[in-house]
Amino acid sequence: MPGTDTLAIKSSNPNVISEVCYVESKLRLGSDTKAGQDAYEELTRKHSIDLPIILTFVLKRMHETRHGLLNPFKEYLRDRSVSDDRDAFWIGLTWEKDNWTDTVLGNLETHISSSVTIQSKPKCTVHLARVKELDTLIDDIFQVVVHYRWKA
Picture 1 (tube, rainbow, N blue to C red):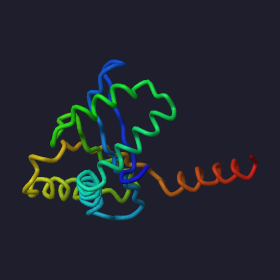
Picture 2 (picture 1 turned 30 degrees about the vertical axis):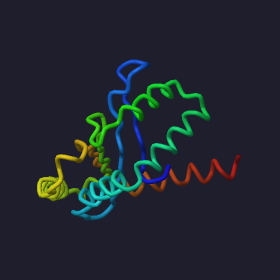
Picture 3 (picture 1 turned 45 degrees about the vertical axis):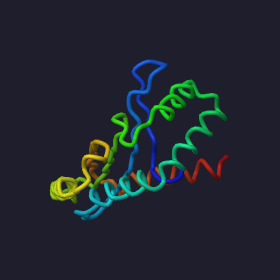
């Protein structure tokens, strides 16, 4: 998908979209106290510049697949205002447990608080997974994928 890692749609019932979530993911094995800020900056930049491209892409894919939320998504697009309160930013951080520091979240919070145009930006939620031996898990998954691709 162009512009952002993932677009997630929350629907309280089959006919109403309650939230459209723009998701940026960061995976880190080492130390990187600015990764949260980087994710937030990517979300805000892509949301302000690439939003028409992202939404058009999703609309086309939903139309091609005859997705059940196609009509509610069209309604969401028709009803959009300059700052739609249904839009949200989600930041997904996956970190090697031994290299995690709460400084990442502190830096992100400071960065968001210091943004002068925060009123016009969607709310932001951070999801964090700290994984012991993340490098080993990544290697194991990669081996399975490579084996599966060669076998198929």
